[in-house]
Image 1 (cartoon, rainbow, N blue to C red):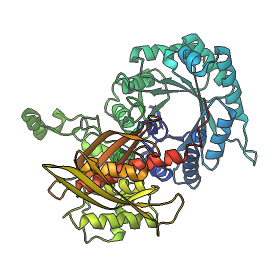
Image 2 (image 1 turned 90 degrees about the vertical axis):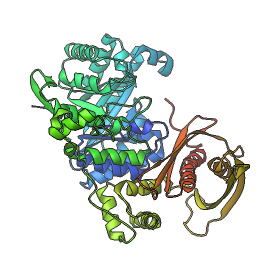
Image 3 (image 1 turned 180 degrees about the horizontal axis):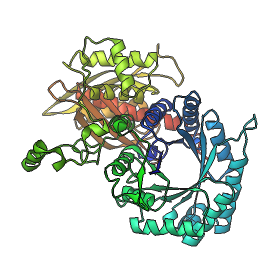
Image 4 (image 1 turned 60 degrees about the horizontal axis):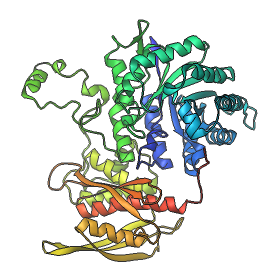
Length: 542
């Protein structure tokens, strides 16, 4: 049996999904859940990209050093620059096992138009940075990284001979893992097999072969599995297929395909498997959906709400007679079980804290207190609080905990024959200030409806109407988290900075849909405000 390593890049590539931002604590929660699921390598982030990302990677590395991630390797991404490598080394120095992941584009279109360098310059950068990463040491003399991975960005559109040269340079300088990304989701399974087989023939060696497939043409999972069939020993993927554009190969699809079709997906007749515990798939998917704010599509393979639903009468009859007629997986295999813990307004703080921990959230005492207060506030209006309610409450808290603006009160005037008017009061917290004694700002604004009016009032307070910048509403929606007239409504919004085009997301929960909407909008506005305040801290140029 051949063991395929699962390299999860939810925290790095997944975070490149428009509107997604994971704070250090959110990244740690996801990392702990990934390690529990059995992920071999976690790409914790890109330390040179921002101080916040460096902090998040360092936090995960520290947890690793304390044994909280087991044997899972902590990987940090870096461009082919020594200062990037230094930043990665600093961030992962506390990890029990660490990896440097250096990358550079190798396709002619990227070399000419993005990097503006020649092929020879590209090869020289590979030689220099891989060698530097391999020889870089800590203060005590130990290697800065346990292993080095090299990625040839846009490999599937790279001239095969030049790709072989790039891989040869990396391998000769000591890269133990060579990653061949289908960066723009361009290749097909048969073509990918030919690329990988040809590469192995041209560049033999002891390096481990890895792949990283995007889903632009809907073939990311198929391409990843095709690669495993012809010798790839590592598959890079994300939970729920998160990632920029159409996303990445989805971890849950790869894991269950290897499990369900072990008879067909083989390498030279040998069975392929991985370390992932399938029973952790559902809760891992739900945690990432909660913290990213990106809902899983109902028809999403494996983890979608309809993945085990049967509407057709013929299908229902078949499943009742024998589940195998229409179900190729058992829902229990992926940890899909009915909620067993029912919390309500009489539940105590201890029960609430225990359940949030079981769901994968790491909250300190202040966080438990704040989330529990919201839980009690909402539970007083609902008969039963489910796990989905708790996820929504904790997700909202994590979204807003670093914010500048907090909702104090609001009043709405609306009707059939008058234009809606909103009066909104927000607590304005200074950066790094205390939780107490903050001023309250109040503004009124008209709108096409109560929600639009409330958003306009928030914009006036935050300066998002033009005084400090301008934002545009990209999307807004509200859904019931649970059933019934007392259902908890979860609002989600996305806004775009008018100058940079950067998209920010936010969410809010309440049994009052307007309150949920305002809180969601504030979540996005707080992220927008933070970006503008940090505008002087630019990421290093490519």
